Image (cartoon, rainbow, N blue to C red; front, top):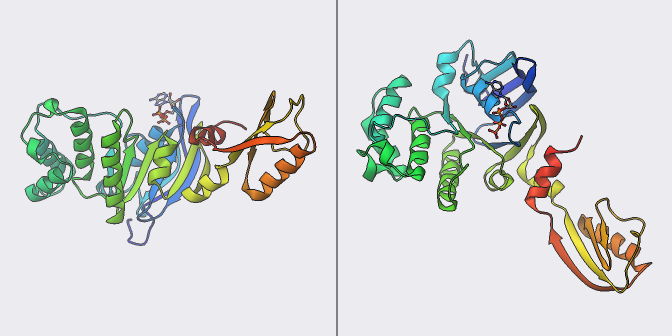
Amino acid sequence: MSSDEAPPLELQGVVKRYGDFIAVSEVSLRVERGEIFALLGPNGAGKTTLISCITGLTRADAGSIRVFGADVLNDFRQTRRDVGLVPQEVNFDPFFTPRESLMIQMGLMGTEPDRAHVDALLRTFALYDHRDAYTRALSGGMKRRLLVAKALVHRPRLLFLDEPTAGVDVELRQDLWAEVVRLRDEGTTVILTTHYLEEAEELSDRIGVLRSGELIVVEDREALMDRHRAHRVVLQLDRALTALPDGLYPGAEIANRTLTVPFQGTDGLQTILSAVKQQAEIVDLRFEETRLEDVFMSLVSGP
Ligand code: ATP
């Protein structure tokens, strides 16, 4: 049964197979109240499959999934009320107006009709002026905002956003991000999937990285970024070197008189400068930060 102290989401050993293919492999995770948790992973990592298991769109083959303490299979009616899902694909009937779509969704979720709440949502998502337009006549950005409003109509305590900003322009992305933060600040727990590290970095309190169905990292956002955010120093030398000096970090590269070396912390930099000075004079020096994309690749590739 649901309980007020239970965490919004608790997964234990969740497995989902399609035939012989394992899409989600033994995933265990606990998400805390009022956090924004980003589930990060490349295409096909299993993000949507995992969300589908939690939201009841598909059934896990093994493991347990609890939402505020309630089991998603045995207490489906309870968990359905607590969960909202913003799917990747726009999926509403084009012949309903935004207001009708939201009222119908309320009915589907078994909530009492509440026109004032629907109108408040329409205002929040800047759709009120279009409340009586055919949904098919809305712009792409408006449709996406309506999707979010639809997921919120029954006031879920746990909200899933499946790649909320895929194919969305910069302005709408900022609006959606602001809305997600506002929801979190009001006490909603938010789980979003993304393959943009920038999105995870901008929004989330914690990040989980899914690779080939396995949850390989779960960490506070800042700790994860700090651990992976290395710097690089680019040194111009007074002569060409044919081999790398000893004692440099892995990933150092030499091209004629330019030496590029990743490092972490000032001690790391000192070590590099001392090693290089044994072999050449440094005539110029500049710093570069590792691109977020490289951080992401180092997380999802490798052993
Ligand atoms: P994306 O970022 O592209 O949305 P994802 O991380 O959400 O990817 P999933 O859509 O969960 O990944 O897919 C995980 C794996 O499971 C993929 O290899 C996919 O081809 C496979 N898969 C998903 N649904 C099915 C299905 N109904 N039948 C067979 N295989 C499936």
